[in-house]
Structure formats: C-alpha cells, structure tokens
Amino acid sequence: MQTRLDKNGAAKIAADALIILAFEENAPAVAADLYQSGECKGKPGELTLLHNPVGFAAKRVLLAGCGKQDAFDAAALRRTVGAAVRHLKSKSLRNVALDLESGDVSAAVEGAILGDFEPDRLKTDPDKSGNKPLESFTICSNSATEAALQRGVILAESQNFTRDLVNEPGNLMTPTELANRAKAMAAESGLECEVLDRARMQQLGMGSLLAVAQGSAEPPAFIIVRYRPEKASSADHLGLVGKGVTFDTGGISIKPAEGMEKMKYDMAGGAAVLGAMRAIARLKPTIAVTAFVPTVENMPGSRAVRPGDIITSLSGKTVEVLNTDAEGRLILNDAITYAQRLGCTHLVDAATLTGAIVVALGHVHVGAFTNNQALLDKLQTAAKRQGEKMWQMPLDDEYKEQLKSAFADLPNIGTRWGGSITAAYFLKEFAEPTPWVHLDIAGTAWLDEGKPHLAKGPSGVCVRTFVDLALGW
Ligand code: BES
Ligand code: ZN
Ligand code: ZN
Image (spheres, rainbow, N blue to C red):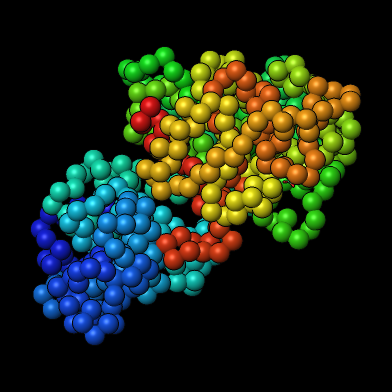
C-alpha cells in the first residue's frame, strides 16, 4: 500500500472513497441532512457510505462515526480508520483517502495499515476472499508532517511483520525458519544478528532450554539481534526477551486435541520482539537494545524431557520438570540469564505463557508482572500512548510457597491456583536482581474473532509498546 500526505484540501482529492470523521456534536457539512433525519448520529463504529458527494472529487464519502470529540483519542482514531479501511476494501475500493484536519497522523496511518492486514498468505487465490489489499492511502492534512507519517508506517509495517510470523503454521515456521526470518530482517534493517545452535548452547550450559528442545526432530535456535545507537543517552541497555515456541504440543504432558492447532502462536512473544527491533532499527532510539529469542518446538518425541526429570539451567539452578507443558518458562529462564551476562541493565519479556492469564484477564489486557515498579510504570506509559492495554498482576513472596521442590531448587509449576503468577514468579527467580517486566500475552496475541478494525488471527500486540518504550527512554 502506498501512503502519502496531501495538502491540497480533502475536497480536491480524487479517490475511490474519502473517509470523513463524524463526531456526535457537530455534523460534517456533507452530512447535515443525514444528521437532521437521524440516519447518521456520529456514534462510534457507525459507517455511512455516500455516493457522488456534491463538492468532492472523490467518488464516495465514508462517514466514520467517532462519538464525542473529547473522548476521541489516538487509540480511537486508529480503530476508526482501521474499521473504515476494512469496510471499504470489502467493497473493492482500494484508493482511499482520509480527511484529517487535526489528530495524530501516525495513529491514523497505523489504523489503515493494520486494518489492511489479512492472514491469507497461504491461500492460493486470496482475491476470492475479497481481501485484496489497498493500493493507496492518502491523508489530507495541512498540519501533519512527513516524519510523523513515516513513523506510523514503520510501526504498523513492523507490527504486520510480526503478525505474518505468528500466522505461519508450525510445519513452516520452525525454529530454523524463525532464525532465518530474523537474519533476513536484520540484514534488511542494518542490525546485527547472531544465532546460537544446539552445540553452542550445550557448551554454554543452557540445560533448561535444551531439555525442552530434545523431544523434537527440529533443532532449537537462540536468536540474538543487536541495535546500538550512534550516540547513547545513557549507559542503560534494554533486553527484550520473547518466547519462541514454534509449536506447543505440551510434550509428554500432552495437550488435548481440541484447539491444539492454535499452539502455532506460541512464538508470538518472540515475533513481537523481532518486529519491535525492525522498527527500532529505523526509528533509532538513543538506547542500546538487544533482542533474545529462544526458539524450540515442544514435542513428545522419544528423547523428550519426562515429568520428574531434573535439569540444570544456565544460571546453575536446578529445575524439576513436573509438567512438560510448562515449557515457556524453561526456555525464558536461560534467555534471561544469558541477557544478564551480555550486560542488559533492564529486561522486558513477552510470552504466551499461561492459559491462566486468559482466565484472569480474558482477551482484553496483557498481564504485566514486575520486580521493579519504575520500569513497569515506564512501560505502561508507552503502552497507553500506543493504545495497548496492560494490567498489573501481583507478584508477592507468598506465591513462592507454591514453588517448592523436594528434589531440585525449583519445580516448573505451582498449584492450579494463580497459575499466571507462579509462572511469573518462576521467571523472577532468574531475573533478580535486574529490573524486569514480564508480559503474559497468551490472551491477547491471537484474536479468535476479527474486529471491525482488525482481521481474525495474530494481533501483533506489544510491538508498538516496545518501540515506544525504547524511543521514550
Ligand atoms: N503455551 C501455553 C500457554 C497458552 C495457553 C498460550 C493458551 C496460549 C493460549 C503454555 O506453554 C502452557 O501450556 N502452559 C500451561 C502451564 C501449566 C502446565 C502449568 C497452561 O497454561 O495450561
Ligand atoms: Zn505449554
Ligand atoms: Zn507454550
């Protein structure tokens, strides 16, 4: 999709359709009659298509309801534009413009690019589903800058890069393939990428990660992507860690058949971290950022790790594997230890870690855990700016009582209760004393149903927040 700014006035733009924002309290001139008759009220989500609008060069005007003006923020603009774009493309209208006198041009173009995304790469005839992408998206605004537009393009295209990775099924998106995609992205973005293979991980002593990998014929990989600023504003070094389980069968503690196909999205945290690096390379924050993506396939092969096995992690701590389906924490702990050894001063991890977070927060909020309130506050500020919802969960020491093993330093699971918290607590035991935030995205990385502004499937959650965090450091 081509994106551009236009300063000649919305009335003059020749497009298949011009989107006009319609607020409740004042009717756009072209909609005065519709407001009077009550056909159009400017309610959020309302879409009204007008043909051959008088006074416009565009063939159609799409009135996009926005609700009350003072409640209409960047997040609402992103959603409104996304829903309008999806409505228009479903009618094969592919040259679209937006009248945006004031408002966040980055959020607007993000809405368009995110709304345009379809998870249909593997359909032989995507046209049939009526989902052909837009050809052009033009924003008519006199105040917007090209830099703000480009920022939105980079953020949204990077988020779609993540969504593409997450959408690929387990047979295609193996750990090796994820590493190859990371290398290609890094090369194209001017970043440094290093991939540790099994032999190197054995040498280092990543016994926890390797235990998860040993049940699969697919070799594991440990992806490291580095961004270094030309001129750093501080000595801080941000480590972004993402869970990269390309398929989670549960291993020997195998999952039920129903819904198992969705476990291809168990690398969404890793994909989010890689998408964020793609944008960071282009937007150039003044802080050093390194991404760590441990990637494995969790399979019940004849060499698979067994319940009761005791493994030694990179940190030296021993772990009793009581459930092989709690594998995410077994790869993240080694990644966290490795990130500390490479000098990261602050850590943020993203992982589709527990079903329990879906029970707690549904599909709305990311679950956020921390050992350092200031770091989480900083991340929350970035998330709010980006319209990504995150909810802080508790992490006090009383939960530690669930993490006692008779035979090793730690078990890899607690009881049935508070499962997302004991999972986070397990990670905290490795993250200490580094300031660290853990984001459980099991409920938010995949949309079971499409939304007016987003297709069904991978959401790309956390990408924009991570980039915003680095830019605002
Ligand atoms: N990948 C799953 C968590 C998950 C569940 C992600 C639903 C997305 C949607 C994780 O590896 C897992 O299986 N966790 C177990 C932990 C349990 C064995 C303590 C779970 O949540 O059931
Ligand atoms: Zn699992
Ligand atoms: Zn998993």
